Length: 369
Image 1 (cartoon, rainbow, N blue to C red):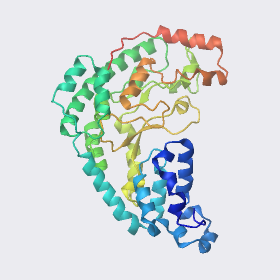
Image 2 (cartoon, rainbow, N blue to C red):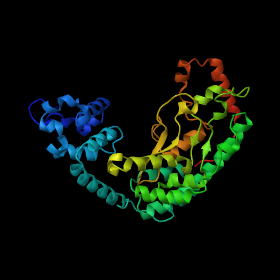
Image 3 (cartoon, rainbow, N blue to C red):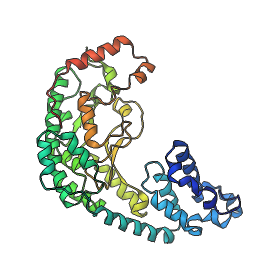
Image 4 (cartoon, rainbow, N blue to C red):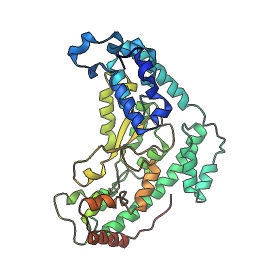
C-alpha cells in the first residue's frame, strides 16, 4: 500500500469499489487497508522510517478523507473509518465532517418523491393490508411531512395491536408455567417517555422513527426473559432449553437511556460524526438472556430518517416491526429455527419433543399487525 510505486490510493483504492465491497473477501481486504490509514497501526519506533503519506494519509491525499467520511456509517467498515477520522488532524477532518453532516440534514428533509394522499395508508392498514403498508413505508428512506404523519398514525394502530398481543401471550405463557410475572413482563410505558422522546429528537437532530416512538409510548416494555430461574430450577414440565431460544425483550426508553448518556460522553471530545450512530440498546442478546456470556446487545441506530429501523446485532436482520412479528409468531421466542445449534449442545429428541409439546400448549389470541 505504501511501499510499492505510486500512491497508496493508486495501489489499493480499487478495494473500495462497489464490486469489491459486495463480497465478504472484499470487505475484509478493505478493512485491512483502512486499518493502515491510522497512525496507531504502526509501532512508535517505525515513525521515522515512514513516508510522509503513511504518517498522515488523509492530509496527503483528499481521496482518503472523502472515502472515510463516506464510510463513517457503513455497516461493516464504519467503525474503522471513524477511528481513522478520529486519529487524523481535526483541522482537516472537521470541515469535511461538518459539510457531510449538513448534507445529511438536507437529504433527510428531501420529500419522499412518491405521491401520497393523507389517509391512504391508514385506510389500507385498517382494511387488513398490514404488511403491505409497512412494506411501502419501508421503501421510503427519508419521510417528508406527509409520509411521517401517515407513518405515525399507522405506527400507533400497529403498536395498539402489539400491546394486545403482548398481554394475551404473556397471560398464556404464565398459565403454562413460563417463569415470569406479569408485572415484570409488561410494566408499561415509562412515565417520562414524552420528555425523553423530545430530548432524543433534540440530541439526534431527527424525529424518532414512528415505529419505535409508538412502541415506547404505547407498549413500553416487553420482557419474557426468565431471569428468576438463573439461580433456580425451572418449574416442572417447562422445558428449560427454551431459555436460549431468545425470549422476547424490548426495554422502555427510560431503561435504555444509559445508551444515550454513554454516546453523549463519547461525543464530548469528538466530532459527532466520528462518534458514529447513537446505538440504543433494546435487549440483551440471546445468550445473556440465558445467563451465559454472549455478544453485543440488540440495538437500534439513530438518527434514522425512515419509519422502521433495523434491529442490529440480531441474526435475522429484521426491521423493528418485523422483529416483533417474528417474536409473536414464535410465541415469544425468536430462535426456534436454531435446532441444529441445540443438537450440537446435546439437546435430545425427547427434549425436542418436550419443547414442541409445551409450545403447542401455549394458546393465545394472535392479532395480525
